[in-house]
Length: 371
Image (cartoon, rainbow, N blue to C red; front, side, top):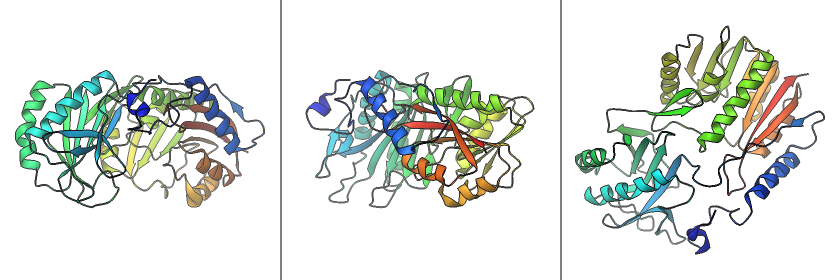
């Protein structure tokens, strides 16, 4: 992928851009195997690759400049905006939407937040795209002061861009490196974006987590479902379930599935999808995944954040009746630490999935069986 922003030194986010894509994937596999160390009998499946460009389903744009001439992209070392609207990681549809959003910023007088002076209202624009080209747009504001102007000018955007189906404002008043705040104000009739993954239409709310690369996420869910079908569990527990990607893909006749997720919004979205699919044996619970409910699950799926499971949850898994564990990790170092804390399980198969081309990051899925 060629990138003028990278070549001009305006953006260095794609740290591996100069490395041929095949070499990137090979290096990631080598890194993952080295970090995980020696696991006798562990079979490595061929890695899942991605399109090297246009793969991101989410744009996280810092807003800089002025309301009349906003920049959408990142901040330079001095805290001033660098515009990245035509970043090659985004699809052409995403790139075409960003100028319309910049125009709305000007019409509504949404003054970009200036980090050095701590003045202004609009901090970020967050855009999520579904595979069929619909968009969810979030305006991260410092306060509710600009909300009336945003509401006034929003209908013109919606009329001109019917692909924008969900719009919200997130309020983040603090001056610190936090992407969003706890309060979300939905400004459209629809509150969720339907994202088709394999044969399942997931519902994403404004604050829902979903993997950055939809096509690779679909492959990840297919792999987990194939492993689950091999062991044919009767009860599945999905921890850190988000909007239900794993849980809904693992559903099968005669199989009970319970997903646990701390976000009430994500649980509501997952429950909606399960109801639409008529899955009566799939349920979701809002709670802390690090302290799971009592469960008789013979298969547990975990998809933790970068910090990993931690000692308490590993100890719970050691005590649990689960004979099979599917671990999806976005950080090999925390995965290696957790595997060492799970001596009752043997890693049988692993597969690297290149969720983040042009960087050193990746996802890895591991199938573990009780000794």
